[in-house]
View 1 (cartoon, rainbow, N blue to C red):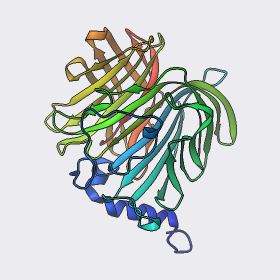
View 2: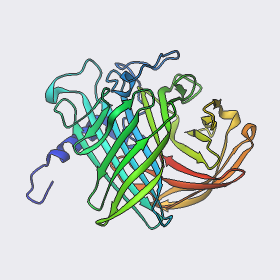
View 3: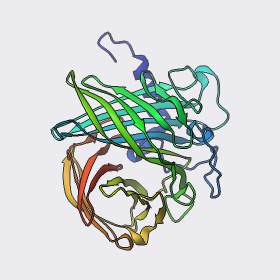
Length: 361
């Protein structure tokens, strides 16, 4: 409630979301990701992706997101990170209903990170009433005034160029995202397995964005440049009941290569891993669990949770052996569905920077 004792519109939407998802969803993150997928479309191998259509929403699936992370620096070399995320969650199956009967809940997260600070904000909206949504062509994803939108002459096959905007009470940013290379289908042609069972998502990325723009922190505007990574993913049940969350990294190598990898944590310790090595010449190679070793090095205690914020990563077949360190180990997203997300740097056999996300801790 606000100071007058009235329930705000945002509070109502947030309460409806939490009530609709239940306690198990809170334990595992947004959308009750391990719940059975009855009433929603299944994720199966062999999908043919079509652009720009697949840049838009897929309401027959339970959950999807449009996700940007950016590693940035100012003219003095001070490092920053920026995050922009739009989630769509269906609280019931079936065809979309009109107005307030619409089954879609939208949630936005935004953050700016520096070595000495981490600022974040969240917002909620109900589908069907124009507060949030995604249009495939021309591409436009928005929740209230936060948006990712195509600029003139956008190339639908690489979703560039785009403008990205978000703001909180003590930060804001406007970034331009340009890319001259195509999208990357993750997993097996965009079919991304999350376990040895049927859990999977449809997943593609644009890891080649060059970012330029302005961050504002405490009313001070800062010109920044850097690299950004865009992920698109949708599913109806991406977690198995015995999986508690995931550890995900996107890495930009100074030599020009890119790497995405994740570890789905299982209660029996037999974690499931997957990844994609994207060479500087545009060729890509899928990595499996046997190829990837992820070892926590340092634990940071945040809100009573033990979060592994530094990692050793090894991929023997690519001669990769690195240690990843966070720009700010307290990059905690204390949102309704809390998780850790922040920029990292790494060194060892390879050097560079990227982003780390960890859920379920």
